[in-house]
Length: 441
Ligand code: FAD
Image (tube, rainbow, N blue to C red; front, side, top):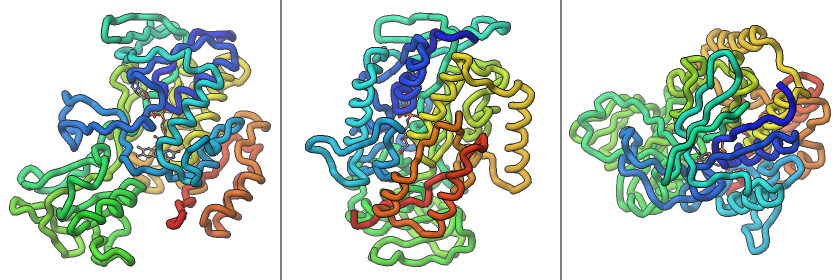
């Protein structure tokens, strides 16, 4: 690989924008393909919902963003900037540390403008095929489609940034074929109004289930939360909420509208809400099975979640890990890719990279961690790459500031800090998933 490559970036969400900036800084020639008519991806609120609200019909018209109208960030703004471009308070904007979603979109637009990224984007252009020109070299054909035409172009590298919060993953419920009620995935939730006076069962215990249940409970008759963990949970009413109950996992659902839980309780529900996450999906990517998606949730093999060993470095992925400090992680991944493509940073051999991935899979198996958690960064176990010793992306000052504004457990913070200083290691075991939005912010 020599410097100054022709690189295709697929998607102009946060990942594509930061990828483009880092590639450009390394003098690569970048084209960003974006199927929408504006940048921002997830952060472009769309009031439309899909016709099939569970997302099972593959012919449905797809709505990209999963934002609901009232959404505020679940990380403080101090953790949602890039290392040299903080997510500051905007003129006439939401000044809170966990601002509304519009602020993130403004931030991304400002970022793209400031670094001359907007002009690299081909809007309204969907990538429909990415395939190697031939199996012996590293060039890629990128076929794209606009409302007028299809076009094929050859690139020396492709960086995949198409996002992974669009294809709903629904829970598998015994008896669901005959259950008469309505089912919705959180991807298609916008506001609580349609659920007025309803009895809802909400599956999941991530940020979406948390936010949506509290909001919808303001108009619904009852909200029944159901989650896999902890096991053997006994049904209980949530403190400070007169109409929200916590249950265990759903045992089965019945033709008469009943939803039965493993804790022995049951309710007659109008709607089952699946806050159960998303599938990875790369419909355009043709790699002859070299990169595949296993059980909808494991993209691989990917060395450190970024490079498929057999196709590295000409094919790479940004933003695959779930949770963690997304924007900073994407920035580090982008710097790494840009540096490798220009020959400044070296990857291990294909065999070493594959062995590393196998090792991860083996460790997961031994610890009985299910495959669908492959990309879930656990607190203090997430792999965030440090490209060189100067890439310190969270400094003491920022952490001190954070500890004043965010409710954190002092011991956890201490542990996080000690992990943070393992900077000479090739990986940094650190994640801030213990940070939570203060209820009164
Ligand atoms: P996206 O933002 O999804 O961007 C992908 C882009 O690729 C889109 O613009 C899409 O149109 C385009 N695209 C896709 N396929 C093609 C194609 N074939 N051809 C051309 N273009 C294509 N993260 C945080 O850090 N803080 C938060 O508070 C937070 N809250 C969240 C709340 C919700 C409800 C969700 C769903 C996610 C949240 N996230 C949050 C995670 C969020 O997804 C990331 O912050 C980030 O925006 C993901 O960026 P991305 O570029 O990877 O993907």
